[in-house]
Amino acid sequence: MMLRRAGLGLLVGAILMAPSVASAAPALVFEPYNGTVLYAEDPDAQWFPASLTKLMTAYVTFQALKAGTVTPDTKVTCSQTATLQAPSKLGLPVGGSITLDVALKVLIVKSANDVAVMIAEAVAGSQDAFIARMNEAAQHLGMTRTTFANVNGLPDERQVTTARDLAKLARAIIVEFPEHADLFSSIQVQVGKKTMRTHNSLLVSLPGADGMKTGFICESGFNVVASATRDGRKLVAVVLGEPSVASRNDRATDLLENGFKRYFWKSLFGTSLDRLAIQASLSDSPTHLRDSVCGVARAKSKARRSVTSKLHGLDARGSGAPANAISASEAN
Image 1 (cartoon, rainbow, N blue to C red):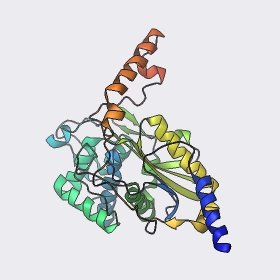
Image 2 (image 1 turned 180 degrees about the vertical axis):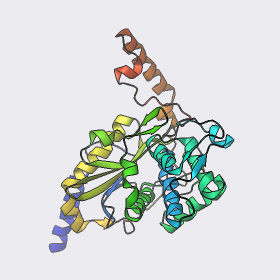
Image 3 (image 1 turned 180 degrees about the horizontal axis):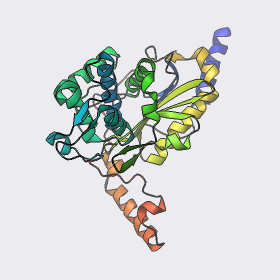
Image 4 (image 1 turned 90 degrees about the vertical axis):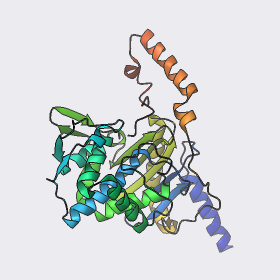
């Protein structure tokens, strides 16, 4: 009888914890210091990380800073290769430079793909050498279903991850490098006369939000790793594959709000990132969302919204409708 009651309690808890926003995409919310998982949905489904890749770019750079092979004042120079990267970009000319400290801020706040290449070349001498470090770090952290093929998250079929693996990476950043926490909570960064604002609007809309990073390419949909702290308790949510910025923000907010509400109960009965049961069956390839996120039907829908907005004397962005209207080549 006691076992039946315990099982019923776990089921009720799972139902209570389930987010109200309907979604079939991977999601996970956890406590980073002890690794307790409060909710997980398809945590091991492979996904394209998009610019969540830059969390690993930052992590490897933090390792180099800690080792003393580079310093915050190390010059990071724009190469020809860096200029060829697709948006989002800082847009320095070949030979232009900034410090590594500024480069890291632009990497996270602006999600600049050219700066990711600049950092890789400055830290490891080449992109290939830096990517090797990224994959070594992934193995060390137990990110068993993750492979990195570039440093910024631009489309590459080989570059895959999972919600669980991203949670392990986020936990490592938070626990190992607390001195860099302010980097992920920054709202904007200034480079010369250019002011760049974060893509992570949760930093403004969600009470207690304090990091970490967004990511988007057409194949992945809209992704985010979001952290928040309330009453001394920190939680992190991983959301992958949402169809819009709005739904991404809603799902992350819902996961975190429910997490804080159920924090005590789940701290008693929750499992850890490492001990969370692996799915019985996993796809051999990541989900491709290009048609649903950036396909013809979506483009027609945006066009209709744009026409309607102009008829009301507003451009499309002014109407607020296509805040998600990002070029198919962008990763941010």
